[in-house]
Image (tube, rainbow, N blue to C red; front, side):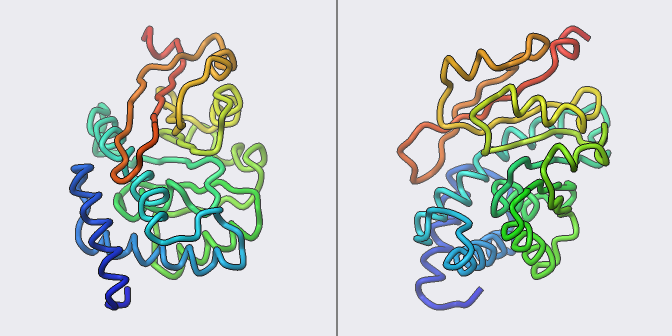
Length: 232
């Protein structure tokens, strides 16, 4: 990342947010997060990756919003019976790589599958993976229905910021989940009509309120799991 004053100010903003979130992220990872964000906004001028174009807003709404889930994901991974095994995470409808790319940067041992059907966005995702040598990123440039068969029962967990409909998220994720796998839905708030879409054999097992530094708006992370796993 260039060391001009504006870049240093943005990096300071990010580092303060990281401290507030109390997540384990190295200085080099924080710099790489900023490099990604700057490249994101460079492409955003012509590729319409996001409605947010201001870099200061992007630090909050793109990076810190993505990183706010890390404490919960870290805790889940550490609690797995074989915590030494490879953890694989599919980000459904990732768009320009949110939250998948920030998670891949900060947790290089995780295998991150970015699932996106819009070609201009998948070209960007492939560019980022190559430019920053992110070997743990796997880009799936197709509709999720077409990508999921080759990932059958190979994914530890799925995450998404893209779905308002819990039922659709479950339907698209289920074929690729390993036995015992879970889903994480990132949402602004829980609406009664969203609850009605959850299949009868699935349940919300955790409902976390996220505190995103610099954001005065509700953010939540919902963990969903099959009922049969709850009873096992």
